[in-house]
Structures are given as C-alpha cells and as structure tokens.
Length: 567
Image (cartoon, rainbow, N blue to C red; front, side):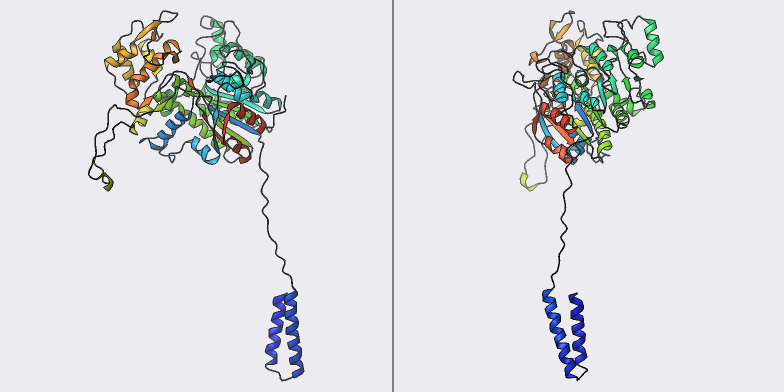
C-alpha cells in the first residue's frame, strides 16, 4: 500500500512541472503530505516461521538383537584392523568399511558390563547367565537358563513379545539349544540340559522361527542303530550327517513332534530353507555346531555350501517375521567367535568375525531406512583375553627415512610391533586348531602322538612353520583325564584352561603366537566391558550411548517395545 501512495505522489509532482495552475499545485503538495503520513502509520506485519521439532520416537515395533558371542573390544579391533588395513582385505572393494562401523556411524555406541549382577553376583559371566540378563533385564546366576539369581522363572523379552502378538525368532550358527539362544526361550537350572531345552522350545510355541544346528538333542537316542527312525528322518529331508548321533537319553523324536504336533515346517539344508516361506519354521542344519568360518569362507568361494550361512538364516528370518503387522523380536547369534577364542585360535576367530559382520550387513540393509526398528549389536562377554602385542621376536632391520628429523640416523624400533601382512596371514588360515587336533588323533587321545605328528598337522592347517622343539611343547602332558587320555601341560595360567583335551588348541596358539604378534591370557572368559552398537531412531538409541550393564540393556529393550507391563 505504501508503494502505491508514493507512486501517486511522485506522479503528481511531475505534473506540476508542466502546469502553472497554483490551485492544483497546492492540492498535489497536500496529497504528498498525506502520503507521508500514511507511510508513517502503516504497520508492517512480519510472519516468522517457527520450526516445530518432530516428536522423538521412543518406542519401536521391532527389535533385532545381534550377539557376537565372545566379541569384546579386542575382537572388534581385529575385525576393523583387517577391514581397514590388511593389504588384501576383502573389504577393499567396500570402502574398507565394516557393517559394524556403519552402525556406529549411523547410530550410537556404548559399553556394557556383563558379570552376574545383583548382591550375590560374581566377577565373570558365562553365556547362559549373560544371555538371560539380556533377555530379562534381571540379575541371573552362572550357567542358569531363563532364571533370576534366586532360581525363579523370569519372562523373557521374546516371551513378552509373543504374548503381545508379535512374531519371534532365534538364529545361531552354534546349536539352537546352546546357552545364548536357549536363554531367550527356555527356563532350566543348568545350560547343559539341552535335551530338555529342545522339548521346551518346541512345546512352548513361543518361537515362530528357529534356525541353527544342534539336531542331536532333537532325535531319538538309538538313532545310530534304529533303521526305522533313520528312514523317518531321511523322508523328512534330513541328511545323514545331521542325524548321525543323538545326545538324548530317551527315544523321543522331537523333530517329528515339532512337525506333527506343533505345526512347524522343517528345513535341514540351504536349499530347503530357501524354498520355504512358512511363518512357523524349524531349521536344524547340523548335528552339533554349524560350519566354522574358515569352512564357510571356502565353500562360499566355490559355491559348494550345503548349509545356509548366518547371513542367509538372518535374511530368511527377517523375511518371515516382518510379515507380522504387530512387529517382531529376533535374536541372532554369531556364536563361534567365542569357540575360536576358547581355542586361542586368532585365524579362525577373524573368519568368524567376518561371517558375523556379513549378517550384520544384511540387518543394516534391512533396517537402514526404517524408523520402527531398534538394532542392537553386542557381546555376551569377551573370550580368551585376546590381543595383538609387540615382541622381541624377529626385530625389524634398520632403514633410512627421508625426513629431516631423522638427522641421518636409521629408523630402527627396538621391538617388533607387528606388520600389517599378519592380517592377511590370519585370514588365509586353511583350518582351525580343532582340525589340527583331529589330524593328530580323531578321538583326542594323544597317548601315542609324536612331536613330528604335531609339527606336520600344524603346518598342514595353519600358515606357520614350527620346530620339533615347539611341537614337543604342544605334545607335552602332565596328567590324565577320566578316560586316561593325556591332558595338556601349561607353563602358565593352567587353572584357566578347563576344557580337558580340547585345550591342546591353546598349546598350538602359544607356539605360533610370536609369528602372529598375538597373546592370549585364558581359555575361558574375561570380565572386560563389551561394545554396544545401537541403530535406529535416536530417541531410542541414544540411551545406549553410556557405560551400562546387560541388565540395563534388557530393560531398555523391553521398554523400547512397550512391553514393560506385559505379563
């Protein structure tokens, strides 16, 4: 309006220059004065746009919990160093970025303590107690499954989710009834009760999708001799390698019960899994644990895998569970990171970390554009007290550097700090330390084993050359077990190697350690805090960016699904 009045006034003034009529001139001047007054009185209304922040998402429809069993910060460091700096890293075509690092970059990162919680707790945890604390948000006792520290049954997040109408799933590359998956869907006084856990998991109806190994506790005790039972399983599609032996003490066929009484579709190999889209699925792909990371790496390379990978099981579970409009809870375990840690086998462990990260990548791809899903990746504990370390072995030769700060002196560190080529060597290991043990004696009875046998087996399955003197150290024993088999002799921390003849693996780890720049402190677990990766809506994930306890993580997950009051 002001611009219009001023334009009129200016036009009037221009007219007076061409007109000698005094009266009209006075009128024009008055109009100009009026225009000035109007300009002064006009109030200009300024509209400011105020940005209203969106309401924070504090609850989600889906929770995906991924557990790298035994994966402490040290193990994550191994994975990241390999991905980023190994000369021939398999991540060289992927911007040298792990899926775990993508979660960290797009979400929140924290730490979690994991020991048995509560007033009567202890310092170091096992997988059963740790998983129970994650599953329930309550303190638990060592080796308990789904019980609190006083032995009472506690409802798990999986059970709460199922009762709230959500779909549920468990995936592991170990055994379905192993400690970690069992803790989410069973309640037993001890983790060793795997036959009972199998029955409970099938009969409860709480888990829609179960994919793992461990068929040996689902099949009749006489399966080796009973041709009729073998025929039944074969007709269901179970390979002989999966039903080769039983760990049950009765003749129950829980596989048949799962199909006929409880409505589960069955799958026993990669092809069968790929074909099914059933919303109630039991997949048992090995008699005990599934293929290790080195075997998986090799069969993937020549497309000969018969078992599904951890990634393929994960994708299948997501495809099925995500059909439920009410959402889902899914736990995925990379369980053999822990097994490699117990064996003090760094090469195997690296390949397990790669296998797990492949599954993490699949989850990240599924969840990256969603606002209704919380993805958590953590560990139950650290295994082995693993670490790279500098040493006095194979000290570097001096070299000349061009920098003026060297002042003509050679660059010659006093110690061997570990060359990056070690990472490629670890990745390229052709077998696990268990393969070495099996080569020397398939029954783990080393009564008649020779130093030469150990030397040849180590050099067959690992990239390392050992002397006969070093092989003798592996072969050394100083006691017998209940079967009169020799037990490994340790010069250090002998009380922390508790797995009978299997601990000959750690003896191998010691004699090749100097070639790996690797040290191990134990054959069991440590109390080190473990990483927590939280990915999803910031209103949910930011609470994990702290130092917490696994009990807290369990409580936060239950709350994120809105299940804290569910019974």
